[in-house]
Length: 581
Image (cartoon, rainbow, N blue to C red; front, side, top):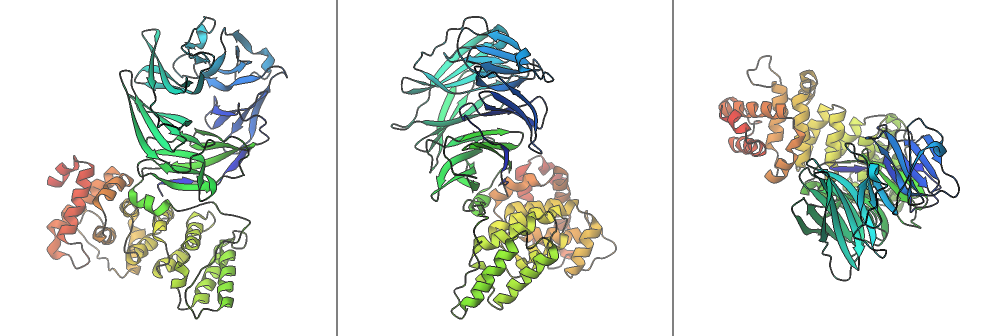
């Protein structure tokens, strides 16, 4: 899968004030600072969600800007009652003994920077280093203007502070650049459609520029690409289901996370592919939303405030292809634990209601992790399902979502690897196409060469990503495991061979090269094959070209070999020299 979103866990609950709630990086990797309410700060460990440290303020002292850790100063920093800055060390337990500084203007946020003192953003739009907080700062904003977003990014060697401000019914992007020991301000108006409004914003830095993603209420996703000398704007997508409660964070230049968007009359959180304009994966919100959503991304995790609970999601995100998007955009991975998973449907007129009811019951038991804890229990339930359908196995495929749940239960199980069940699913053509990539990831993880061969033999249309995963796995696998699998496939291995890879590996690579694929999709997926394995593959294909006359019918033909070589060379033109040699 190009993206995954695990089930959420609770990091903190009983959040009393959603306006101040914020998640920031701590002094220790793997820990986060949670500004939990206006009087409470906690340090949580991500792995086990334990609270490691806690500080609280007096009743009349309210935290008004999220607490940060300054790697430059080796201090925690909090803003109290808008103008008082408190700093304290990692080991200091008494918040009242923290160092105090007072500002002349109200502070919006303090932004950390590893190479300099933290930067203070004032409500009036001015910025200053924390070390110069006592100096008066007049800004471009008036009392009626409002900063809706601010962030600090490094572009080349420059520090740049970004502020998005609502100013007289217009959205202004202000950038403050620190150059030659002074702040230089640029302002650009954000062009939005008529009769819409700002909803959410996030930034991604890309070395020489920064991308500011801006989500509007009409669904427009704007991208402002900013450097010191210019700012360009474009509408990337128009996303359906956006509401005033929707929040967004960017994972990379092509993927964002959206929370509290509406899909199929449900509020969801999901990873959205900007390039193809579709959700790669999504889940229903863990609890009904009764107040504003908040969304953060840190240390490979998503943190989402929903109602009064802060949830944490593990996620992964990789470059996607159109084929994977088409396979995943309709998948709802939220499993209703209270409801019975849908059973198989059949259009066969001869199928009795009692048989259908029995199949429903078997599917429910198979999917229940408590009723099928062991591989033996799981296999018994599965074989009972096959037996209950007799010769009408097509009926199993008529409920695709049920089959997806079964396949994903097989490949994600941590307690066992159900080789025989997956083998049967492949043999009887019961695996939905969008699940092939999941099986590919699972069988390579478990080094199941025999199942890989079954997949190549039984599945006609294998996604390009899976073909690349198979190729990398086989070229890296131990020869002994491959030999054992190909013998079961009816291939006889000779003792001597002059080809660059073993005959057993060549047998499987031949099957991969003979598969149909789209050149464009294959090129996008070849990052799954290591450079060394690409070189080995090129050497083997050259060998095949020179020895086609001696190879049997199982070998790919000249056109298939040349096409595969062209795809490899298109990805890395430097490899053309290897091919020529």
